[in-house]
Image 1: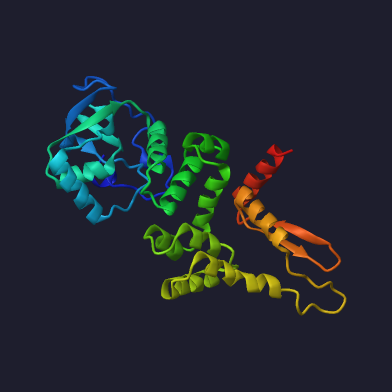
Image 2: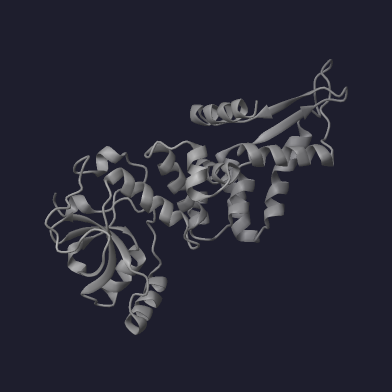
Length: 300
């Protein structure tokens, strides 16, 4: 494989586009046995093409470089054997990059055997556990585990020890425009802001709200309030013969919030003065509809 082909691929690409071979464990005749911890020449290690992290802050890498120069690498990298004197990172890319900046020629590493499917899953799950991973990177990791590792949300929930509603709420962020996802990634807005923006009906409204958040330093509650006038004003000018929609009570709003949290999607109520109404569960694509149906089936 050429050196250009080893560059980190874009997130979301299928496994078939990433792999040289479906069974790439080349574990024979290696100087370092699998399962061992050893000092490995940094020149023999290649980056992990499955790493969900695409953004590494230079200042953070410089701080880690200084720490490594002073204390060495405290936590070994984890690599897999690719043949004699060839290894590929499974986890520890920040330490790997900082070690390169520090001018190290060798790094301590755990040597493991993993096929590409297992390696992708290990890298994604390991990275999700990191505290410094932003909400968008977490969401992309969840999405890849579901799509490329063919996990169900229930299996994913068990692997990462997170609730299904937590996973669903992160996945919903990927429906937002790229500009908003970038703002979350760059810590210009919080995940709470982003979730509140999902309640706005159109991308245009979401982007306009983002501009206000950044210029006016709006809180999450401020953003949540932006969507409320739309919900309460609809139906105020109904034509003759139609029933007038009314505002929801505090209890009903709490029900909505609970349902949205449990289902991981937008939920709304259309209620009229005669006490009748509709409970509406929103979805944006067929995969999400199937997920909701599966959740309802399991609750029977």
